[in-house]
Image 1: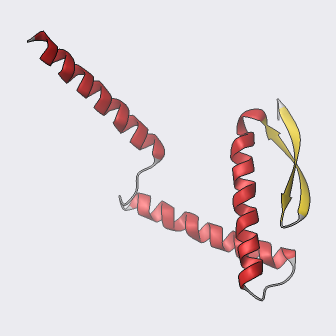
Image 2: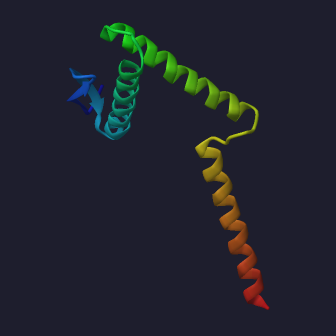
Image 3: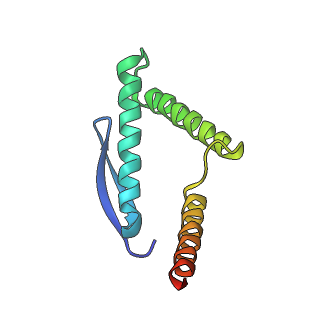
Length: 105
């Protein structure tokens, strides 16, 4: 990894040292926060004990959430962010062209 730096994060009270490129650090920290929250939720709401088992249960929960989101995108119930951005750019261009045409009159 070029431009990689080491960061320390805490997940469920356990310290981890991770390598990350600077431009990906914010996304990684958000992911760490999400994993920590999910593992804390599993620990608090179940009888599962042991960090490895908690991690597996949290991973299954997050994977299930991801699969539901992917399925909703596939069936047109949700749109990927890139598609939404592209559509907004196109709409802004059309609106700009319409305004320009109106100003000619």
